Image 1 (tube, rainbow over the protein chains, first blue to last red):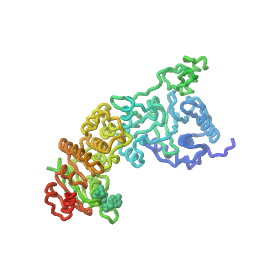
Image 2: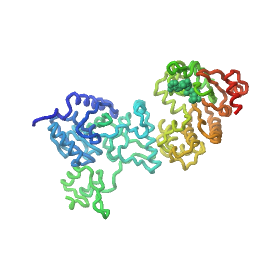
Image 3: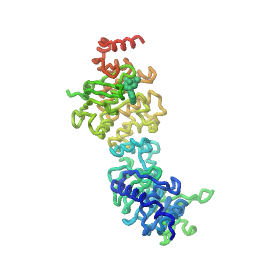
Image 4: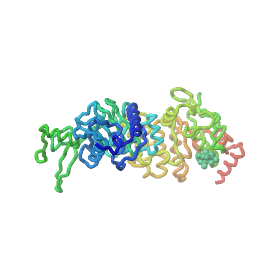
Length: 286
Length: 256
Ligand SMILES: Nc1ncnc2c1ncn2[C@@H]1O[C@H](COP(=O)(O)OP(=O)(O)OP(=O)(O)O)[C@@H](O)[C@H]1O
Ligand SMILES: [Mg+2]
């Protein structure tokens, strides 16, 4: 292959700088490590933070997968996958099983990840306290002194307005009994999976922050004693593969209001159908 | 009896200008001290130094902590000082918006200090918020409204509720009735007086308004150019002022 780029686009010095931030993040789980975010050939909001973390993480032997809201074939996922195919020449896959590095936006794959896998999240807003306290000097102090009462004020507001904790995405967690962390806008259904065997790395490009959750780290979703955390999903089975344990997207089928529920994790759904599972509308759709 | 607060040689400069200097006094449990003086005399500077919002250039602010007895709060660790700021101390700002979260409901505003010290039962937090709304004469059905929907007087009462919910032992107030209509001021003063008595609060109240100190303060300090020029029992100072400046202050007010 003729290579117009350094491996994985970024120069070696930049990757070293990012790796130092990643290692620091792993050493202090949930702590937001500042890093000098670089211009990437894609706009902010397209996962430049995740892309930089992936670039510093990938080796030539890796197999790379990208999902956007669980799907491998959205424009965003395809363009990031192509980017590393071209700049790093790594193998790519859509199968969660076969990937060694998975970059994700807004989902954790359904299949349990292994110790030899790395999950890289794209993060828009890394600061979980930002909603109620816009001053960065103040939020940094709150983290360092573990003054996290404000997070519960946010949940209190939720319950008082909606009768339940309505926060459905980016549901705040406490990592290793220390830092409160925004898990990026994954559905709260995914929160229990944050305690996993794989390494989890979070990259926020515009905000220039990297943070991490090492394997088997305690991750607790914040809640109240009388309003305990509940990892909710649509109360249906997947109409294609029949799965009852996966996070579902609702798809409008026609103007008459017909709809279907399908696994948001397209690889999970495909592998189940290949194994012979069939949902309510499975045969038609297959 | 150990004083709740012992202030020793407090000084704060802004460059060459004196904010306040040589301030010394003791405050005993249950006592309310008024701090009066003209604009620019150093009242807010002093109060902010005492409450840990400003770092004084010299002096000690010794607070009788529950756990360790008298400790100099100027030199204590920042986490410890901030912890005091949301437990045993309270600060009521002149402008309610400086002391409230305007984008959070009244209940959330009151509940914040409870949650900050570990309350994790929504029903309990809400019940205490409602109870405190009642104590500051705000209708229970406003508990989910944001302070931006409240009148100035209500905002100030909400700020007071938010501060007192953790039953602090020392309350700092900077012009708590400033900027309010006279009738609204009177109601607020009444309320404050009731709460101070019921809860046995110790307080430091900065004000321009001698009527406020007459009503609330057991003792009084008069400040001018950053220095305390006279202090004593409120009635004594107001009825028989010794310092020429206090005499002027008292007479000018009486003429109004
Ligand atoms: N941030 C600051 N920088 C510089 N000088 C300041 C600052 N804050 C206050 N000062 C000065 O310190 C002196 C005391 O001010 P302070 O605000 O404490 O007075 P005050 O008695 O509270 O007045 P007021 O009644 O108007 O609130 C004044 O000369 C003031 O100009
Ligand atoms: Mg002032």
